[in-house]
Amino acid sequence: MKKLSLHPLTWWIWSFAIAISVARANTPIFALVSVGVVGLIVLAQRDDAPWGKSFNWTLKIALWILMVRTFIGTVIGVPIPGTTLFTFPRVPLPDWMPGIRIGGAVTLERLSSALSEGVTICAIIVIFGAAASLTSPHRLLRVLPIFVYEFGVTVVIATSVLPQLVTSVTRIRQAQRLRGQNTKGFASYRRVAIPLLEESLARSLDLAASMDSRGYGVSRKRSRYRPISWRISDSAVALSGLLVMGLS
Image (tube, rainbow, N blue to C red):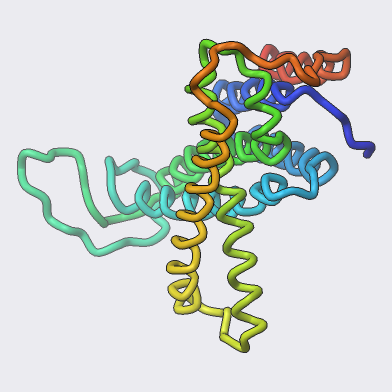
C-alpha cells in the first residue's frame, strides 16, 4: 500500500470516529475487527520515526489492561449466575457491602462479560495509539488554532512521551547488550530506570531551552511559513471513519 501524505488532523478525526463506533457497537467482534484494520493501516502508513514505533507498545499495554480487567472482573464484583467454570477462595465482607463478593464461583457469563468489556476498552486505547503512531506530534502542533495552542502543547507533549520512552528504552537496552549485560527478565528493567530518568530530564531541559529560544509565549501571532493544506484524500479518509460511525 502506498503511503499517504495526509493532514495531521486526518488520522485523529478518523480514529475518533472509529473509537466512537467501537463504543456504540459494544461488541468484542467489532472491536477486534477494528483493531485488525487499524493494525494493517499502521503497518502500511506509519513513518520510520520514534512516534511510529509507539503502536507496538500500545498493543502490549492494552494486553496488560485486558488481563488485569478480566482478573478483577471475575474475582471482584457482583456475581452473575450461570455455568460455573471454577471457584476462587471466598473472602468474607462486612454486612454493609451486600451483593459484592471477592472470590467465589466464576461463571462463564461473568468471564465473558469481563472479557467483552475489557476488549472494548483496550480496542479504544489501541485505536488512539494508532493515531499517535501515524501522526507527527510536531506537525499536529503546527495546525492547531491559537486559542487552543497551549492546550495543544500539553496534548502533543503527552502523546509524544510514549514514543520517546520507547526510543530511550531501546537505546539503553542496546547499550547494555553491547556491554555484555543481561537484558532478559524482570530484573533487567530495574537497570533501565536510572538512565531513563536522566535522559528524560535532559530532554525536558532541551525542550524548555528550545521553546525559550524561539520566543514561545511572547507573540500571539501564528507563522504562515509552509502551511499544511487539507486535501481530497484527507476528506476521503475522514469520511470513511464517519461513515463507519454512522453505520455502527
